Length: 431
Ligand code: SF4
Ligand code: SF4
Image 1 (tube, rainbow, N blue to C red):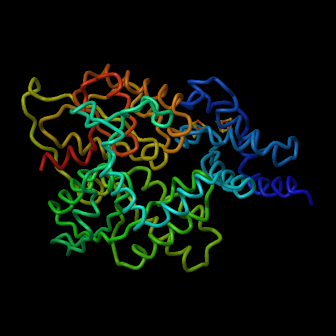
Image 2 (image 1 turned 60 degrees about the vertical axis):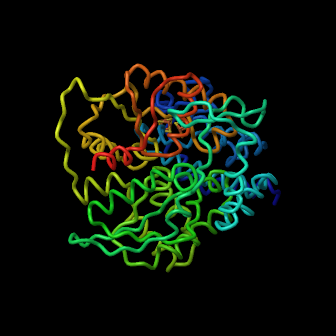
Image 3 (image 1 turned 180 degrees about the horizontal axis):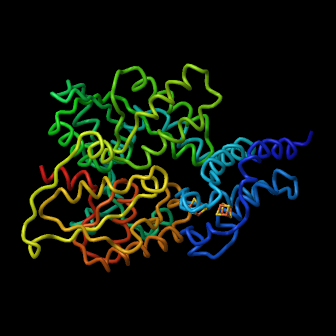
């Protein structure tokens, strides 16, 4: 059998999910990528048709299909708006894995995922080195946003304004934690996530402050690894499996009520992608993953739905600072969590939550999409920036560190004086 036939058969295994698409095109109006490019190959319907063509052996260009499949934010806006309930993200993720298995990973991706990301201790050391010497390559550009830009013309960094690596990552200031629960008797495990650990450790500190305030016991094991989504998005299931198993060994055996994270992407990966991609694992492992996924929730969901929070008193309306909220796709579209982060923001008496237009329109980050397709990512981000500016806010809050990076970049490039904060930081400040 030719290797293309083998590939077609592998893609055919997704057929029962692909055929659910009735080609209605409703996903066009929801897709942030299509809104910028207007290209059918960029929207879910077009990508599903390409996969179908590959499965039916109608064309023999797997590279072309892979290129188009990679041009996607994996934001889930299409799936959330699909009247047929097509599991678009599940299909795309599995298809990326099939195609990467067939075509192979680039040497750069192999090195990043298998030699760096999969080895948490080494990854931490390399990034500590990076934090020490980053000043050679980048310079501060906006003190309010804490952003920096490249010192040199760089095709890699382009015109990006980025958040530098933190001088002290969370795993250095709080290497581990295992505290007893208070009178409520609730204990959670905290999955920190790479971006919070290495770029926004203050968000992790805010989570710890809030959990301590509410008398929630915290289990935070040392040596935590990435949730695996960067590797999985590139189809590298080998690195993904390794990261899942590493984290499972840390979290899967400890008795805990919930596993919480302050990163929407980590939450949705643990809840949805870990079970999806562990179907071939041994039964016992699969069960532990399913149990952990069922206990996983966003920190705002845990605080509002399980702990219960109180709104602070209201100051004079004229004195309140306007704050707006951006819905991370991985929180609202993947997990349906939108009310709870807003409840955290309303709990702060000094702020007035004012909704921006299109609060749940993707910010354009999309993880590796931002690295590979920066121009489109920035174009989507500028739409978000316009809505933030129109809201006349002083602060834009969100619940995902990746969205924080993207909005910081967009606001900083335009010199807009709006702070970017995580909802949990705002709530922690109110206590
Ligand atoms: S909205 Fe759903 S069913 Fe309609 S074309 Fe898009 S993916 Fe297919
Ligand atoms: S996941 Fe997002 S970017 Fe990708 S096709 Fe769906 S709506 Fe478009």
